Amino acid sequence: MQNRIKRGGYGALGHSFGGFTVSRLSETDPRVKAILPMTVAGTLYDAKDLAEKSTTRQQLASVDIPNIPCRIPLMVILADHDRTVGDEGNRRSRGYFSRAVGPRYLLQFKGAGHFTFTDMSQINPSFGDGVGVEKGKKAFRFSDAEKAQRITNQYSVAFFDAFLKQDVAAKAFLDKNHFPDELIYEKRNGK
Image (cartoon, rainbow, N blue to C red):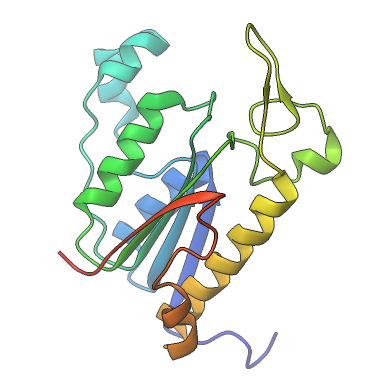
């Protein structure tokens, strides 16, 4: 790994609570120059304050969690059928994206769930919430997890190359949605 990691600038990505973690990391560690939260974006809040305001999951969804705007390049990846964070979690993540002040990208995968972006499709192909067929009242077949992972990898590598290595070709790749059948793509430059 020697000479492969550039000192002074790092990127961070995280899935689910890891998305919260990298969002918070962007506020506390000046070495972090770009973040990519998947399925959850935003900053964590004081747990004691939240415990005083909320005792149930339903109450938790109604608590307005203050988010500090992201000030570094940001790519948020969401799933439109995410049962783990639900519509409220996606709404909050889109809010974090909207409040960001630097260059930012939003990828919302069609027919994807919370675990579409993980290795769960190899572990249990019928897991649900992004893998296989959704369990519950209405049968729903999720999009191809392996294809979503390949697309995620392409955009993730281009994002980090563009903002950590100043790669012009990678930045050009980020200019458009290369997979309109699989995802909704939004790009904003600065404020």
